[in-house]
Length: 200
Image (spheres, rainbow, N blue to C red):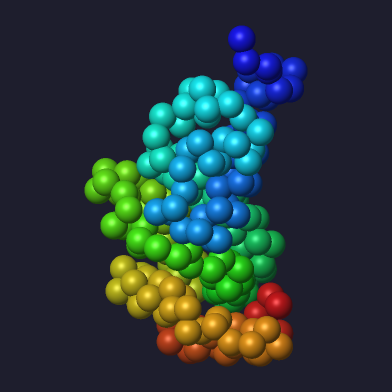
């Protein structure tokens, strides 16, 4: 029988997933999804192949679980950050700032694009995690610019915040680039650029 890590099966499961996701995170950004194998992840995580397959039957299920875990933790971080801002302007500035910080932190993995690497159902499952982020933006816009249609503004804002060109700058210029993007988005949606309420 495999050795149980932790004091309970639930704690064991969490610890295994944490180990595996830490290894996968590194391998994904070093090698790309195409080069990853379950056996290779298991070995680096200090797990037997059988134990690995008990948690993740195939590479696709591993990637989906990893992305869902990352997305869940990011949404919690985003909600907490936005909740501390006092005004709609500060909330939107906080939202933009965090989205771009995370984009700057995560480099695109080499190899096949995620959409091409996964079956359509798995990709839709991963994409669904963008919904709470979109909902957060929708709430901010509904209060900050109630006379505008958020469904028109949301895709334009998310397109602007999804461009790596904004954050692909030398490290010493990143803060200025992000603050420039904050001002751009605030002006684009018609919110006052009140520097005292940006929540920086």
